[in-house]
Image (cartoon, rainbow over all chains, first blue to last red; front, side, top):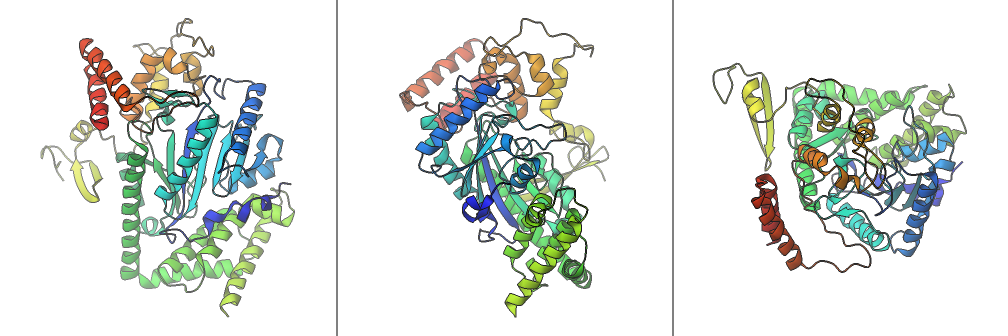
Length: 360
Length: 164
């Protein structure tokens, strides 16, 4: 069993709901795809080459300022439940964790984590540098990641082409290698059925959306990850500015949708969010999807001022702790234990009761 | 409702655009939408990578053809067929080995083949001065014009403009 307490704030600093627009945006994640010059890409290289890459990256991290205290987790030496735990914390991708349906964890697969920064090693590319900030903060997040990129780039030689930019294993990431995603909660647009228009609009302006856990994941609890589609032909700043502009627009649509709901159907919406709260407070069994959807309702209720006093931090924390691997780890159960839905309901009840208790 | 562009055919696609924070909504017929590069609404968005990978292994008649065994990357031994099967390249040199195909793909994926972002200088290498970069670009621009590769010339010119 891995000990996530090794990480400052358990690697969850980004969920503290302190960031800009945190009532709508949970987190901003940026990653840069990098490969080492002169080395075969991960799909075609050998076990020993991946091992060497990991050693080189670790040694460069130790020499750096920003990652010198990074905690390494070797995915290839972890049990599936622990790998899923790291994935649920958004610290590693599904691919690196070997959680794809046909997936096995690749030898040499690892992640180095220090505060908001992380480096996935031997993922689709040799390195995936990443940063997670609370709320909507693309500029601050990129500024931090850019410094890590510079530090590692001075110690490791990256594969770079004068015309194509940073070379990546998949041509969809070539150029800047930059993918910025904003995890945003859009229940208003879902309830007013405007969401499909907004999502279609995204693809027309070069953005794409994914579910809660990124690539290939489903949308649960009305959480969407909006990110840039292209990585080449624009500067990093242009890519981030464009994403920022569109996300601000989407936030405005969401606020408008919430106003429409409150204006046109106040009784229905109040009933809906209080029912969600009631179920979470008193249900005796909750599946993960149900818990996410109810938490989404409560989050909306808090956001529009109908449910007073429940803190966003509490809701964010539940979002993490109610996930299967987190719950199983906390309760000492296996992932397939039939009692998990009961334990989940118990956890949610207890946390919400505490929240009420704190308010007196 | 008739199409906002041709005012003749029936509008079947609603196009919502966000430009500089302004939302515009257009109702277009399929032909006018296609002219604007909009794919059919409700259809899954086309993936240029998927299309490209699928098309690479087909002849004009649509039959599967074997790619010539000669097309291997000398550095990693990977082939275009491997790329088609996995969607991933074998090494950085693949970008040189399969440059023609990849250039075409990059243009379709990103609308460009030119990295405009941060320049990278590997450890132990003197960074190129702005003047050197501009001179190189001017040389390449001249070459592109001489070989009548006007698309590339336009891209290089854009990059020069940014630098200047």
